[in-house]
Image (cartoon, rainbow, N blue to C red; front, side, top):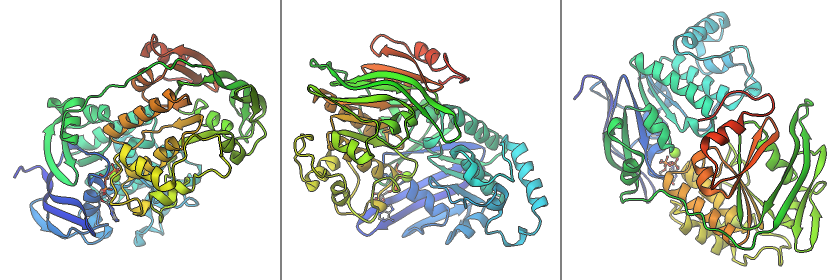
Length: 510
Ligand SMILES: Nc1ncnc2c1ncn2[C@@H]1O[C@H](COP(=O)(O)OP(=O)(O)OP(=O)(O)O)[C@@H](O)[C@H]1O
Ligand SMILES: [Mg+2]
């Protein structure tokens, strides 16, 4: 065994009833290295790491820390061994300050907040974090909250850090900052395990990549010898083609006509400034922009969730025009605007965790959508279609959604929206947390809807995907439309320029 090996897993097996989540897994985690753990949704990554963080115990197999066999029965045991995990769903108390959260559960340290602040500052200086110990959690952005989780783990002396999809909710700029911190930790001889589905990130930041497939360990490769294609092939177990079809639909006409849309948040800041554009049938209209340029407000305004200060949103149905401004979210849904929105809290948003896929499909059956929705499938039929199209990993359509892996929950959420076939389909960050194969399946489903004549709005982060998938791309910058371009003829650089060209926004992306 190598001397820098911090953790070794041997023949780890973990089952949930009849589901084999981890099947005889062997894995080495080394100090001074960033190891990416890669695998399709439901392949067992989170389960495996949860056995290191003391949340689950293996059915069989052995765990070694620095060559010595250990038993990890609780998160406390894990901390005592120097293992800390940053979970995808944060466990912070909103009304407490950063410092209070960092020492939460450490009985002896409650008294002296001055000393705590000093130690937090030391950790921050050492790894390059920016934390205000006195700030309350509810005042923080997602990325700041994540930073607190990481500092919390370091405060407890962790030298083996496991991060479960930390970048799924970060902007590219925030991701860069996180990676700089991870590199500093690696220099400090810590062992780091990173779970992410974004292959560009894997290639940029890791030293090695370990691959799981359907609960089994496939192997570990050196990142310098790997490519996006080779990793995908290992993950899926066969050669996969990574390209997106972009057929042309011949009966294009206006579907959603937005004019002069202006919205202001409750602090009086203009979030959308005189936004005008048209979404057409048989077209995927991409929406690009630096995070926070008004994408969220745009979708929320269209779906009736955001108060509108000025402008109009017209839904065109043959010869009739229906004004959506002033309608309730339910009325707007019934007109035919569906939203495949991917929230930070998947279970909080329109899914009932204790119900299975079928039950959750039922929640979206339309009250009086007689002729509006062409889809006449039963909830069971819809559930089966999503199950098949997106290869949802679940034993049955009645299996509680809460017990599925993160990515599979996401598949149900997005799949349900697409399968309900609304005439206008809005999607935001539809592939967050999805493995690469499923991401392409989603692109295909969106294209299928477009070829059925739907007007699709695709808010996305990856410029390469926007350029390959969409027909046109609308670029937002500081709440204004800085351009609407033909995706077939535009370059990444041109979009990048538009993303930073009007309003007060600074910085670039990719
Ligand atoms: N508490 C549980 N009860 C039943 N099954 C579970 C439970 N936790 C996980 N599973 C199952 O174990 C398998 C592996 O899940 P896991 O969450 O480890 O996948 P993952 O690789 O992290 O996927 P993702 O990329 O989607 O997060 C899945 O089939 C999942 O449904
Ligand atoms: Mg997971």
